[in-house]
Amino acid sequence: MLDLLAIGDLMLDVRVESGDLAPGGDVAGRVRVRPAGTSANAAVWAASVGARAGVCARVGDDLVGRLLVAALEEAGVEPLVVADPRAETGSMLVVQADGERSMVADRGANGRFSVDDLPATIDARAVLISGYVVLDPATEPVARTAIARARGRAQHVAVDAASWPLLAERAEAFFEATRGCDVLFANAREAEALTGEEPAEAADTLGRRYRTVVVKLGPSGAVMCWEGLIAHFGGTEVPDRNPTGSGDAFDGVFLAALVGHRSPADALHAACVAGARVAAGPEAWPKRR
Image 1 (cartoon, one colour):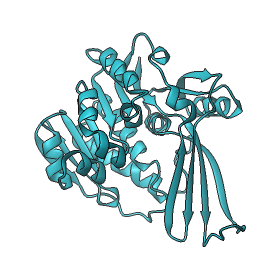
Image 2 (cartoon, rainbow, N blue to C red):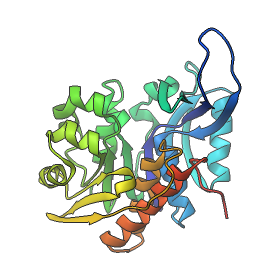
Image 3 (tube, rainbow, N blue to C red):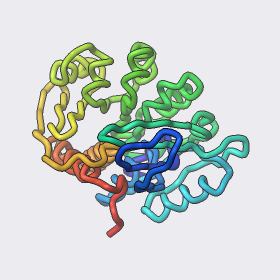
Image 4 (cartoon, rainbow, N blue to C red):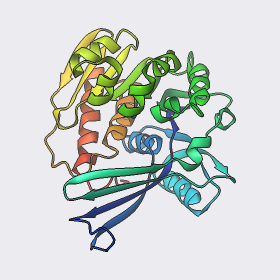
């Protein structure tokens, strides 16, 4: 049995760091190409703390897709990955220039994720579903089916809210699709999009829908509503070099700690530390020991 099965996104991450860009021209900078995706990031971090983790996702039947599967295996994560002959592997471009961060996402094969890609039986102590799967009408049935198959078998069925602009448009649909989840992860803007409230109040409000709610606050830590009780961890001060992927690391380590029989407070602390490690950069995945 897996400790964590992360369901959703596996893609290529292209990160560009530069000073001022020169529109129409070229400048020197740093370009990093790495395996990524919200589900992959969470699973790899769970594996790094000793959990047996897997990823269920769809990639293209191409070189990039094969490299991503190999990267999961190298990181100690079990890939339950389908190769799509009709779509390219998804990719994300992150450009850090002149102090600002901009992103362009091409979901590629992730957008064709289907119910048939799921295991007939979801045998995991914790299941984490990417909010991007929930918020895309084309893949929402995958999320609903995964939740239904996990309920009654998994100790925890979790969802990450993923995207505040999408939540602003589809909040009620998100609530309806994730009704069977007992854990919700969101950052401050996502929590506000769902409730219109500040983090602590949002956690309390969302706690009426989900047994456990964690609102991630970046360098300020996180606030958690656990069965109606509010707890706050103050965070770890780090130079914020690379926030992309830090929330995924948080999710994976939090769930790994819970199924490893650590207390909710210990899980929150461990998750904040993992998120801070990613934010300190430059890599989104931990080095293998």
